[in-house]
Length: 263
Image 1 (cartoon, rainbow, N blue to C red):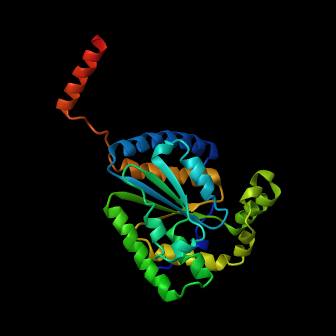
Image 2 (tube, rainbow, N blue to C red):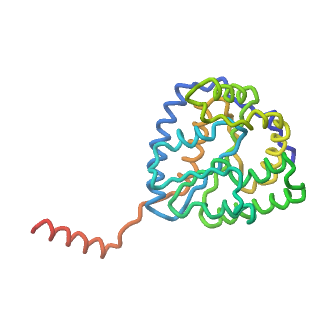
Image 3 (spheres, helix red, strand yellow):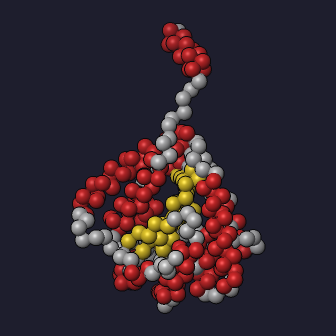
């Protein structure tokens, strides 16, 4: 298998793509996702796990907010994985992930995920390379278990350019409405751009039993379109149906309803 090279993959939409057309399609996709999420929740047979990974400022928060804004909050939960707590550090790295995987009928969104444990820990050399290889295997086994138990796993790498990242990090300093997003370590982590890119290339290449979707992330409207389209298409493939009430129970319920109305 040839080595993945992220630098050779575009971070912007193709020139022929029309922004206004895509935005109209996004609106239709949101309505369709709402319908499918209602089916998912009602049937209770499948679950969906959306994994969002990417460099700082690649737009993970925006995807969570804008792509899934139409779904019923009862059927969708978001989990962010930052620095492990003291208790989490005393368990294996998948412990905190496994306990919040989606139950049947639910959509869960991971804003960062178990992949942080083969990214930041590798870049800063907090674990050795042998441990990273073991974790690659463990991640593949973990995701295989999820897919074999009716969880649809959708993994997205938000592919942002270093130039666009710097613009967005600067906005966090100059725009008062975005000051709260500023983290002192973000600019420091930019110094490790090449190391992070290599770590991502290795993670994507080695943990691909469940395929990755590499999403150009410099333009939010296009990024959100691709993710919405992928989620909707994956859910449509499930051929979901609303549960049908047993005929005898339905007849009994209709008779009881008719009797109640006559009183």
